[in-house]
Length: 177
Image 1 (tube, rainbow, N blue to C red):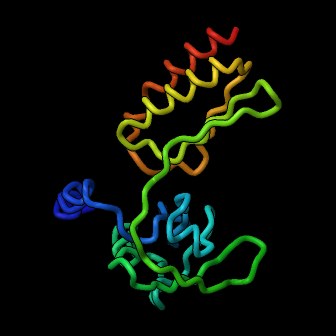
Image 2 (cartoon, one colour):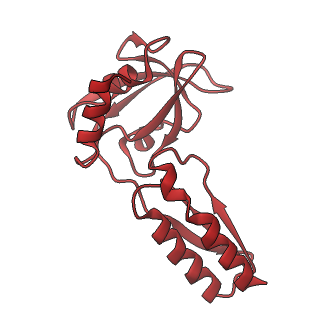
């Protein structure tokens, strides 16, 4: 990203999220969906993790920068975007997504098989580590014997937010032993 792009990104981090609610990367020059955020317009329209976006409103996503592709995908709430999607084992399809506001959900926990705690994390936004720590504490109080931290599809947030997690997990493991 250019200096101007970084400044614009930093300035918009606190603004309400409006767009389709997906995190992207690039694979073989194409826009690749790392994560369709739970409850977002993208997920509601049928966009899935692992989808390759071939065209954005008729414009090829191949070999344009990730930043520029994201600018094409984002837009005014209520406007519609047409994405040509390539998905493993299926024919190419066009999915229309109505842009809107969305919120990245907090971590969720559940108990499986009576003694296995599962914590599903959706992002590493500010404050998420504390929420995960609370979830770990609640699960250990409920008597779980093991904890699985599900980080699949996590693409949003800061890497520094994940740093306290090994400490939380090691304390939980000691209390489970």
